[in-house]
Image 1 (cartoon, rainbow, N blue to C red):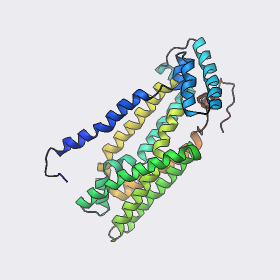
Image 2 (tube, one colour):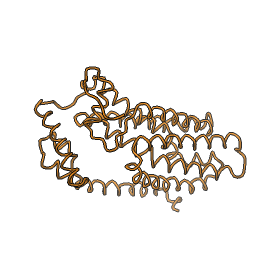
Image 3 (cartoon, one colour):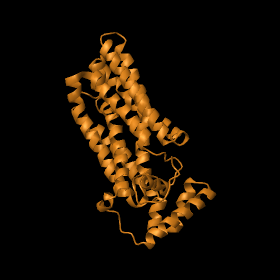
Image 4 (tube, helix red, strand yellow):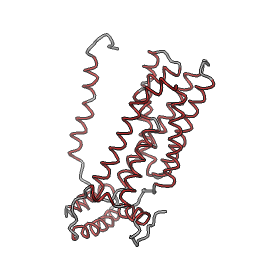
Length: 308
């Protein structure tokens, strides 16, 4: 609308500060996690926070478990987690699991489409102006996918949702690649590819996108959560940097179809990785997830996990 105004980008960037400001004020109303309160010996606050998100009976039962574990940790006078703790095999395995989930999320291709949606649509056959307008749909469908994910993640579980998302995203990407390979000049190709990309976006943003972040927040024991999630999230964003850097180069050198085949291969690899490596964390306490990884990777650990 205001393309003739050379300084309009300043308005666009300024508008992006609004949600940041809203989040800034909103965080003042956000309590700390119950386990953080417990590590500081603030057991009264543990129950108060849990009662906001659990039934009274559930909150009381969970608060007792958290307090029991925290008192053992406090009695042992454990120091704050550091990088030396991450030499333990079972903790390294959690980091590898979380880091790989972040890499898979990014190498599935979502942000290359969000960043370079206009170029993707142009490569599909749209004109420059039509591609700019059609690219707005990417954001709309991304929001729709996130809303769907909010309502399904606690019903279907983390692992099944991640698996379904990776498989169907892979199928969507392969379909785009096949159309581009064998029907690149057909009149129906641009619109069909756009529809498939929108299907891919809504699936990704309703499954892989939120579930990756959620699993990464749930697999680390409370003591290692801050540093552990920091490492895995750094890995995720570094993968994002690599994909964002290389996508235009790959698009120009090997073409849209081959790039999408590559993303699809990562989706299918991701589905295999999740199936053999990631535990279901829905409704599972952090302490039990710790037991799962220790039972699997710590040979000196004598406990047995209930997670299968």
